[in-house]
Image 1 (cartoon, rainbow, N blue to C red):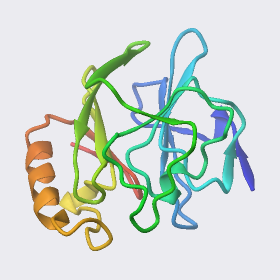
Image 2 (image 1 turned 120 degrees about the horizontal axis):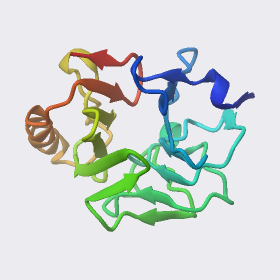
Image 3 (image 1 turned 180 degrees about the vertical axis):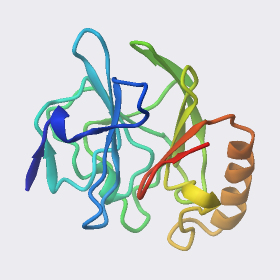
Image 4 (image 1 turned 90 degrees about the vertical axis):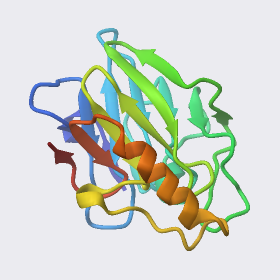
Length: 189
């Protein structure tokens, strides 16, 4: 098990010191996105599968959906863990941490960052993306990957294909410059 400190994270963009990511391409685990503020607080988006342990406890953690490879890294003592309230714990591969709380707003601020929460069902009923509006960064979970690919829908609800199409349509209207998906490489336009 690797211990992840700030030094293993890479910059999302060359001009942003406080927006970072970690990707373990050696196995199927989610990318972990890290934002930190001038007061030393950190926010992560997705926690990985738990086989790489963070060397710090984040101030807040937002989970793009409930699959274990995105939620398995959440520790029981973390406060401020959030997931969409429509996530369905009865679906395959879902592991919702006991300390996860349902999100109750559609936006929030963290230091110099402003995030809009976009519900994007399809991959799972509670899938969501976070759009950081000040720097046009879209954290898309497993809804949207580079080159327009999207997450699988065969392990979700019966209407997952239709929901995914609607969600991709919503995301097509988001003016992002950097795409930060749940797996694989990032994309800059």
